Image (cartoon, rainbow, N blue to C red; front, side):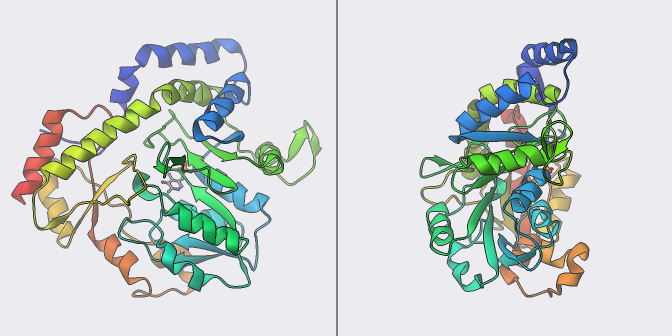
Length: 363
Ligand SMILES: *Cc1c(COP(=O)(O)O)cnc(C)c1O
C-alpha cells in the first residue's frame, strides 16, 4: 500500500459540486479580484474567529509582514518568536528589518512562555506566537505578559484554524491573527491566500490600504503599499470549505486519536496536548531518537513522512548574519533532529492508517 503525506483531492471530492458551482459563479461574474466574494468571506471568517474585522490577503507570509509593518515595528526593534517555528514567522519580522529574539519551545512544541520575560529588553516591541502543528499555545500567560510589558501580540495561526485555548479561538488573543490558506493548511484554498483578523478598526484599515498599493480610493496613495489582494476565486472556494471546517478538523482529531491509541513502540514519543488547549492536528508529530532510520524504514514500506522542520531558523543559511551558533537553542535543535510528521489528511481511510500504525509498531 502506498501512503502519501497528503492527498488533497479527497477533500475536494467530498464537496465537489459546491466547489465547482462556486468556481463557475466567479468565472461568469466578470469580477475577479477584491469583490463580493472576498467581502463575504471576510465577514464569515471574522465571525468564525470571533473578531470584528478580517482582511483577505495573498498569503500567510504577507499577513505576518504586513502586521509587523502596520504596527510600525522596524529597524532596531526586537520581536520575540519561538525558535522552532516555520521560517515564514521569522521572515515576517526580518522583512521589516526588525530583529527576531528566539525562545525555546515547551514539551508541546509551542513557545515556552516561562522563558519570555527574561528575553524582554527596552527594544522589544512584540511577541509573535505560532500555534505550531495546530495546537493552541499557552495563551493565558502569553497574553498576560504582552499586556504587562505593553507589547503587541501577533499570532501566527497558519496551522491553527479553529484551534482554541480555554474555548477562545486562536487568532483572537492579540491585535493581529495571521492566517494562511495555502492548500495543505486545514482551511486550505486552491492556490495561495491568507488573511489578518483583528478587533482594531484602525489596524484593519491600515492593512486594507496596504494590500492595495496603499490606497483607500483608487490612485490616492496614502502609504507605500503592496499588492497583496485576495482574488474572488479563492474567496469563493474558501467560503465553501469554511462551512465544513469544524467537521474537517474533527476528522483529523479522530485520526490523531487513532494514532494515539494504536502506536505502541518504546522508540516513539507521541505528541502531547496542554490542559486547556486543543489541537486541530495540522500535523501529527512524533519524536524518535533514530528518526532518519525510522523515516527510511517507512519509506521502504511506501509510507511518506515529512520533517517540520529539519533546520531551525537560527541555523538557516539565510540568517547567518544574525550570528547564532549550533548549541544555542538545544531543545529546538533536538526537536529538529527528532521530529517526524506522520501522514494525516482529510479522507484518510482506516485501512491506510492501520497500515501506517502496524509498520510503526514493527520498527
Ligand atoms: C504556512 C505557514 C506560513 C506561511 O503561509 P503562506 O501562505 O505559505 O505564506 C506562516 N507560518 C506558518 C507557521 C506556516 O505554517
